[in-house]
Length: 159
Length: 159
Image 1 (cartoon, rainbow over the protein chains, first blue to last red):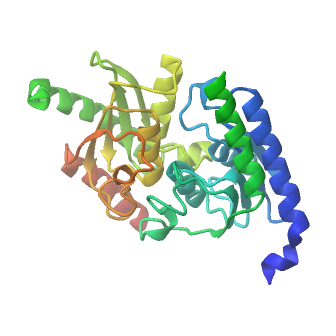
Image 2 (cartoon, rainbow over the protein chains, first blue to last red; image 1 turned 90 degrees about the vertical axis):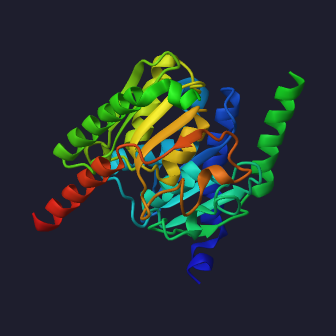
Image 3 (tube, rainbow over the protein chains, first blue to last red; image 1 turned 120 degrees about the vertical axis):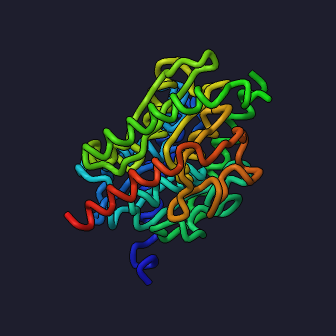
């Protein structure tokens, strides 16, 4: 009920913002993944795309950068009630960071059989060592998210 | 052979540096965990303790801070041939970051049944979604590492 009350519009606009971050990352030569963090009041409090190459930082995935910016703005290492939107299934590092930040709900686009950590592999949210399990909603704008990645890696193979 | 060639002295001194970082973190009111990154030439290229509270950053674990500093210094998101020493078994986030940074060898102290991600729970290095598996050596200075944590949480419970 909560989900349908929130409506497709909200999902769509926040995922659209994440997709815009993903496209901007791709234009910078980074793997095109984008994320936004939304407050309990529905405000976007941070938005980021991958910057691992630019920053020489293997932890600079979109989700980690968005979490760090939102936490810095909040002055807290925890973001209760917040929602994180990301265009691709988080990797194990990002999934564990999402849990550590106490994100209430994770909404993501395409699944990532190669590197994902939520629906496959380590199943980060499925062990007693995970002390906070967010609600997870997957498959939102998955086609567009996957197409961005496919185009990016296709172009790089050809280029 | 490689390990015994490296000798106990090297393990001890690098883990001693990590323990010093852990103690300094505890003195700052942070969970006392410390880490150092050592280059293929045996030089300490970064050292860090937990700063999650100080920085309001749930990703500011000792390992992540040490990896980010070493990568920034190297101008690369990968650290082939490097060794990461950490006083406690890495959590899933840090284990995945260690893999992403292509760390060659992970040496850690105490196991962490509550929050660890290497020997238990998600077993980060044990899935096809983990694209680089470091050599893992555990139990180095485990007693001292565990005592630091026990003292810290004991003091905090009493304090």
